[in-house]
Image (cartoon, helix red, strand yellow):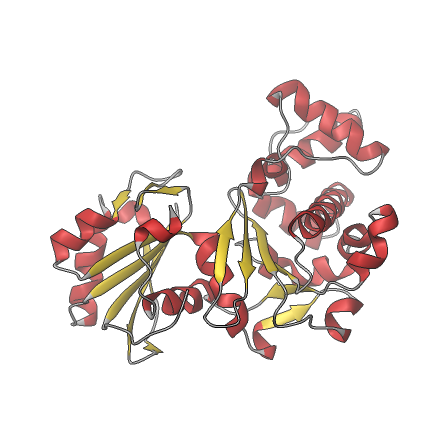
Length: 330
């Protein structure tokens, strides 16, 4: 993906099942971010009309990242009623281009632009070795599901991104406790994918599984309640977070060795930035490196938590400045 001049103003949109965020970009400068509740608008068209009226400027193009699979420049939100069709948006709003991409694709394009105060090293390797600028990088993250995308730098250009479906890979156990937990999940789910445990809903499943293994019966608790109880010192909630971070670290290490992401593994998503302190204290980095004879390989790979407030917009801005077309991401 090579750079170019932004045919602005460009409307940048980061669309999730709960919230949708919008900003205008002109002359490489992104304006303030406006956040709307997705459920407050019947369609993406209605939301865009609202923000265009609020910003008082008509966009010439739009770039939208969507929390869900994208095919042929179209997406259907998994947890909301919106259908997003880039070609229809282009015609409706008279745009030169409306590009729809997966949210982790946009996050991957932001990686080379992150400054020192927009990421935090997780583990000693991140602090000591930032990795080569020419090496592949991967961004992963738990949210409603589990996303991952690989960034491939290019000598002459802005690089390429390969979206993945790593969240649907089979979840692997690294110890006896995880084997017992996965066995319980398998009883209910059949196939146990990474995102069945390493996600917001997954945190609830892990919590219930640990309660069952401890001979207790408790109602399902949402992720926010589990985190709050862990902060209050509840043993069960802290055990759940410890299990969650261990599985996250092991999964991140597996993704690193399978993608060759020697330039670094970046953690994103809606959950982790709020749990930075717990993440740093957890077994994440130890489990990341624990791959037998591949441990020395992983010890050299830095791991980072993205702390930028709206990192997707940095990637969307890069996409807005390129001549990329929907077919480039299909």
